[in-house]
Length: 256
Ligand SMILES: O=P(O)(O)OC[C@@H](O)[C@@H](O)c1c[nH]c2ccccc12
Image (cartoon, rainbow, N blue to C red; front, side):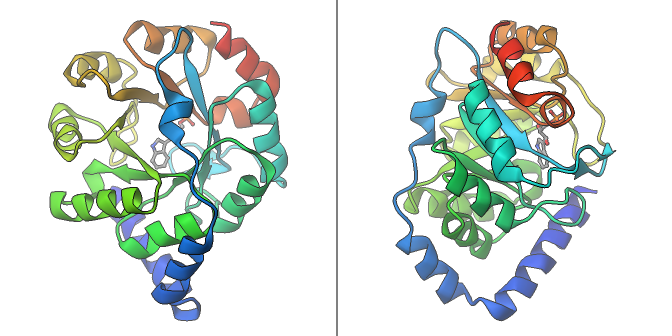
């Protein structure tokens, strides 16, 4: 499944490249105001921080929410106390787009994450050109040399990589990269199985100084507390926010 998600994302990128060349996207990326320092917003603190996701649907859960106005949703996330906004830009299975990212960028002053299946430099330049401050890199989807290249490019463009892992071996590869922001996804992107305890079993391997993100499977304040107790600095939440009242849900989760 992960392979086909990556293949689809690359096919869509190559279609966009037919009308907007790499050189054009690169100069649009360089013309943007400087990216926001996302690590400053996510630095470990007395309370948990939240990355709130704009997510319409997913291959595992199907349609979640219509989200006619992603900018309005992102403003609610900002009002509710989110630290970063994640925007799924994958179109085939998640119903997202780069237009969503641009709309969100224009609507909030928080850092914005491009959440997609990134596997070539063109997509990184696109992210910056649309105003992203962070880009997701999924270790399971990338060979180490390519991951290194993409990680370096994200840094050169002033952005922050969120490096996503799902096993001890993947975590070691993220650490080897020198990543300052590492996520553990409870969802296996090949089987879609959820393991809410995976973060806790891997957290001790993450070096001091790295910001630790627990991704997926947060439905209740108890789930937030579970990740916090296991050492998470940040939780990344999609479904619970798009299917409930975003401000009330964030307020409740941040109080836990
Ligand atoms: O909707 P949830 O269970 O709160 O999960 C959000 C987020 O972690 C999930 O959307 C996600 C994590 N990693 C990904 C990689 C690609 C696409 C989506 C994801």
